[in-house]
Image (cartoon, rainbow, N blue to C red; front, side, top):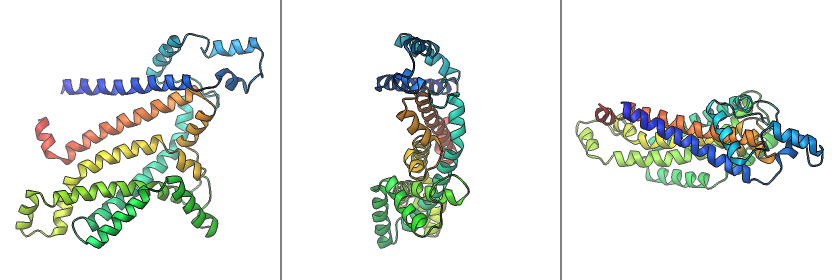
Length: 309
């Protein structure tokens, strides 16, 4: 167990180091003067004040020195002070994380429920219903999330006035963003899960189960669903990490605060410490989710547990 643990730790370190390096170089290549951002605009302060600001934030040092200092502080969880918010990057991300977790977790749960329900109803039977479901999934996957959000707002907020237009207050303000974000996720997960179920239903073990007189419904629920779950879990983990790290469109359309909004503002204002912190946060989310997925594999597939033993 020691060797796999060391290998996995090396992979985690490599991913985080690569993300930090690419983000640092990308931010440095973005046009703009960070001193002007810190001082409130061009020609706001004189040369002496510009020099003082550059020295305070380490912007006057060589690029390699800035990179080494950034990595050293990042290892301890210190990403500096946000230029825009004038507070620790860690504090800014922590304050914005709650609404995003609420939105992403709810959307993922709804998407999984929809995907499982649609897959169970259409896998291996009801060909007309299956074709209808596949067509609807393709339409949803081809539709941008922001367009779905605008349609939902137009109907349910502006026309019927059932839900608030913007904000984070209460359950009613969460329903439309969750639907807009969960529909594409559900469509993709349903396709993968249905294909896995249909593949499982033609495997030799399925013939053996049928020979015992077990109904098709029991076969799907007790045996086929577990067989098809591995690919769906992998995709679910990737989608969850993507939703957490990239909720910009949904939060912007519905006027919600969260990681997406501060990411957009950080890019607009060239807030280098905050951009770097957000990139590292997204990379960490991907790493943690993948570790959880590996653990779920062992719980679902007994063959992997036997191989490990």
